[in-house]
Amino acid sequence: LTSRHITSQRMGKGMQSKDQEGGGRTTMAEGGSNKPRMSGLATYWATLLDCTTPTMSVSVDSKGSMVSNANANADGSTNGESSLYADKHPDGTIEKSRANGYQSVLPLENKWSPIIQTMVLGAGLSFFATPQGVWCILWIVDFCSGFRGSDFATDSPVLAVLIGTVVTATSSIATFIPFARHHDSLYAKYKGLRCQPTKTHNNLLLTLKRTEVRQTVSNLTIAAFLSACVVVSKVKFGYSKIYTDVREYGGDYCFLYLLASTVAYFVWIDLWAYVGHRALHLPFLYKTVHKYHHKYQPTTAFAALGLHPVDMLIIQGGVYTMLYVMPMHVGCIALNLLYVHYHNVIDHSGIYHESALPWQPSSLYHDDHHKLFHLNYGQTLTIWDKWGKTFYKDKKKYDENSFSW
Image (tube, rainbow, N blue to C red):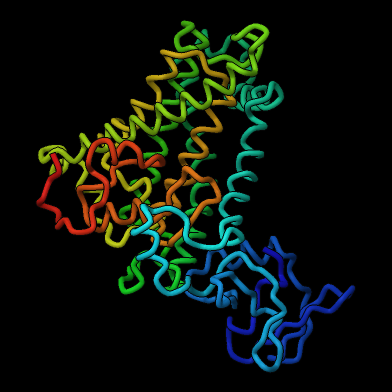
């Protein structure tokens, strides 16, 4: 976001902002004082933590495309400048998406924000899949161990797992919270963007008093522990088929194998998400385990990891199983887990999102799962639900006690 897209005139009475070319300052009508203007990035992070104050003024034109009102003319017309989000989606968007099998119904330009965010996050994370990135991770672990040498994980595997868990959990929590918080903010500010516009929730405080926030912290720690166990067991015992040198598998076709294994892992994760999720909707498992996740109505971004620990272990167990079956490069693993993690938050945010990727359904697909319970078990590909006859049917009656098995 840039400061041009963030209008402070809606943030409080008597406040007026004005960009001065070359001056880099903002004039405040209140008190008549001049204060240095924050950069776009600083402004973004400052407003990110405030879930109650609208910060953008944008609308939708007759074609459903987003139009920024930041530079609105006196007659109410705009200069046609695009922004990241609209105040509301065109009327009938939710119904059209559901009737269209949760496929895209909005103009293409409305979908670029999520895909660009994914690419930026992927670019950042992909660094850690390079030798330099792996070296940085090993250096952090080595630093935390008091520089005990390169054989630290082999000599002290328990301590290595402990340190790896702490480092990974800390970084995961530190990056997850701002991202989830951002979508909490969107939910609070723009009712017209919600999958369920007539419903609301008040879980907007960033506090451990929120059950889903506590569960997010604990489940990210569980995932960090599992990851640390996988890595240390690979170093000490040679378990798993993870590799870091692209040329280690596939010979002359190593890059083709890299691509094929990335796609195969993606399909496996999505298939397991469907099978594991559908199993969690068996009456016994649903009532004793998975119901914890379904109590968030409507869903929040933090509800993405608002899971019972057993629920988390079932889903993560399937994800890690493939690491011991098929040789996979660390970049392949990182890319897939980032993609799944990203859309998991999007799908639980309560905000209607579409993706420019043709196989990715709108966030309504999973929102309907929480709204109607026993349907739409898939994560990314809708084909599993269609084959399993659990895809949404318009005339079918759904409720929490009508199990689909």
